Length: 239
Image (cartoon, rainbow, N blue to C red; front, side, top):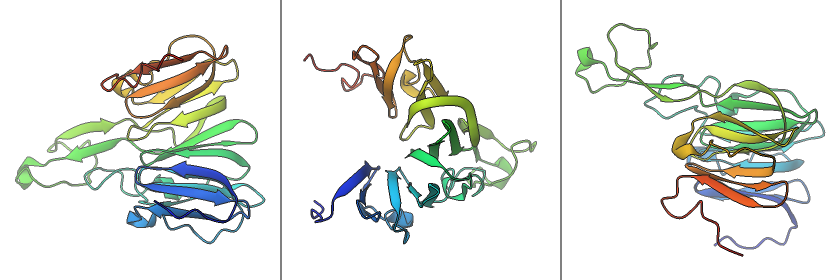
């Protein structure tokens, strides 16, 4: 367990193997797995929000509500193409942000005008070249005539999603997001692993999504879940 701080906490986030907190004085700290320095907070003194993802961490800070992200600095692992461009840590999308969430090397943030930007998680390809013995991975374009390419994941928009959202949730370990549009219906983007993006029709207050399942609260307060139910995760207990 992490020692209880004497400071007053105003925001908290739990990632895959690390956790982070923002204090009333605008400072933040993280603990747990610090691989790729994802639990090492930069020296900002005016942080308002923090989000711990799988391999990265992001904050909103400063008078202009700017985004800063750090950690793995990749859109995928070592076997995937795309290199280090358009990764979470490379984002430079202006100021005025009010909400941010990170997932598996992807992130989404909403600004004060209601515009939601997402970035990271470009389409990933695994290359296994038979003329190299069939065992090595190479980051070459997928249009080469002598390579085997397997589309591993969908790409994220890497920019404005073009839809105003009231709130949103970014899935962990699966590159997808679910948001609530201005008419209270759901907006989805990305991988539909386990039917986690198969949102039932109707109007919603808020929806949370993870890897293979999602749960939401309807306008009338009713709870509903969908997606994979391997462990009973889509069957809420009876009140």
